Length: 83
Image (cartoon, rainbow, N blue to C red; front, side):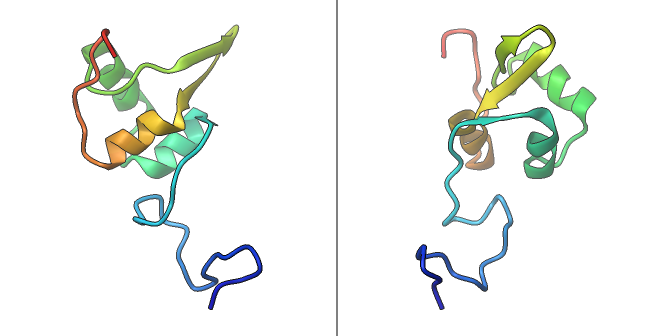
């Protein structure tokens, strides 16, 4: 049964749930919860163009656009410099 915000109380918090929409920016720890890979693998994929490049927020702080992570979850794999 939906709560006051219209969410289903019984729905799991799994990122791959078709009803979940990712919004905003996502830092690496959350990306690692959503994508079954290690941090070093994520960074390797970024260098190889197999994973979207993060946005630099300043200094050593980076995050990924939630829409890019959603594309990864949806199975899109082409993340070249032109995107």
